[in-house]
Length: 277
Image (cartoon, rainbow, N blue to C red; front, side):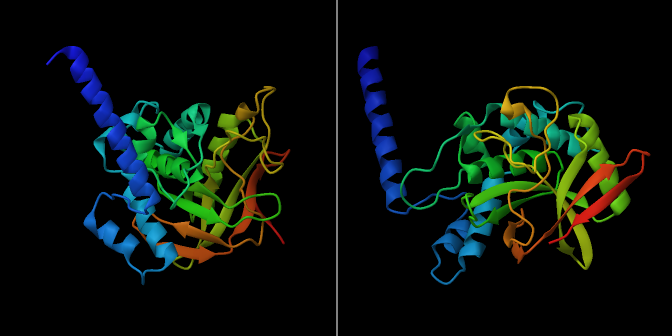
């Protein structure tokens, strides 16, 4: 067969493949990486949040060698016992510089896997971004989760990833100091919730692309490009707003988290301050 004929056949097969994918998506049929995931998602008795938790966990692909390789190429001086916060910041910097916001097509909600978002040249919605950020950071050892909040005021419903800072206040201060030094911000905001009877601190790694920075984000530098005016920290949701948290092991929890911030005063004293309702 002539080369031109092969090209025509290839084009026809590609179009048919795309049509099949579109038709399957519109019909609510999605292919998951495991039968267990598909069974949970298609079950009529499993709660929505449990289905979403399994979908997120399935999509992270933190143990995938290609995901790890992609993350390693975007981090500096990675070693097995390295600073996962700095690695997460390296990934956040790169992802925010290159992510393109694209909404899901009509039909059932679709969550792209980390590899799918990489192959799509870093395109997708907030769920896709959250999965990729959490998947890449998780592949180099960071402990991440994905947060969902309902819409309030002018803000629509949203998903974003958070980095686990720990439960020890001295350790949290040290990590917030790193963020402050790296990005030149005076304050570093975080969320607080309970975990195993202890206060757990989480740092927001939400995207900065596609919108002007909210007042809660501290501006640093003198850049006129708003993509460069924000840094990890603060939160999309306000104090007193409930949220659902999804973890890499496929579990989830609901809470109304608190909020606080790290700051060093004029005398060089570092402290954590809780924001009251």
